[in-house]
Amino acid sequence: MAADATTLTEKMRAALRISSTNAKITEEIEDCIRACKADLKNDGVKVIDEADGLIIRAITLYCKAEFGYNGNAEKFRQSYDTLKMRLALSQEYNTPQVSETDTNTGESGAENG
Image (cartoon, rainbow, N blue to C red; front, side, top):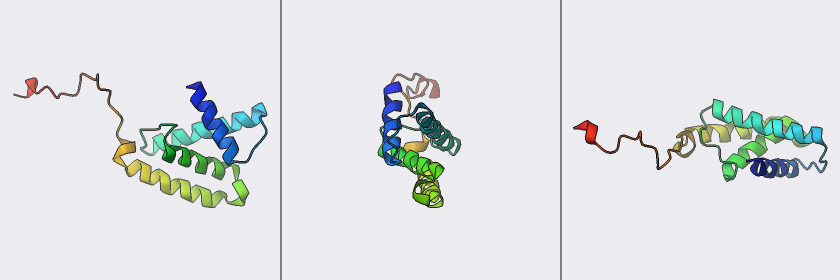
């Protein structure tokens, strides 16, 4: 998972046009990523795959809003809020994935009749 976090951190660093690899700046970017994930979860997005294009876009918009990118923080916040709402309403993102080995699905039908 650390490799994924680093990749996402580097994507945000590029999106924000931050070339510095200073530890404090990296920590702030990673805090912003964690805050975005928590905000998404809080508003009903249960499937947060860091390789998913829409999740990456949501995190990018959130980070740009938080960092005040190009003086357009409000614009980025509105775009993020709109995307977050769409993700929360999408069954693909608001339904937790169930493992194929989950034995509590009740599909056998033996207990139903």
